Length: 156
Image (cartoon, rainbow, N blue to C red; front, side, top):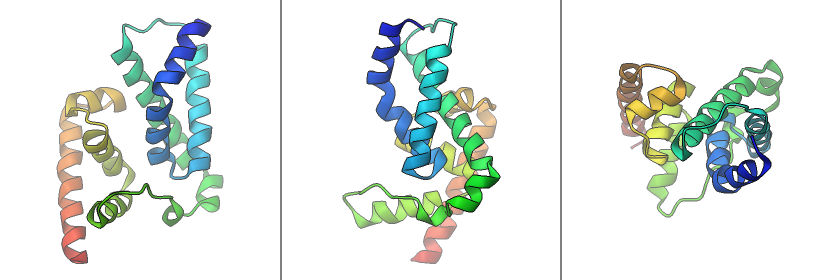
């Protein structure tokens, strides 16, 4: 990738990549590592992108995969407990509680919920980003909602 295009992409997508990395990796330090890895891969990418949306989807897919690779690491599992994940600040306490419950879901459910509700992607787009069928995305969303509903009713 040309240096000027790369710098434009970093400036435009850095926040998005960090948010997805934070969600996927679980800690700010690991998210920063993932962001560096993603942008290194972007810099080394030789194929041109069809447009900004293609680049955006590619970045999200690479970020999710890099986050998964990091979470699979045995070293990381021993080093960072899941309950130590820093939480963003929300306006309403209900939003904070909902976010905590989303984080407590299994990774496959958590990822589709995040991309669908927080990033605004459709099920088709999520399927393309994660490399799974749209029907698998809708199934995961449905199961995640049911599990989240169950967990929230237990809390209340």
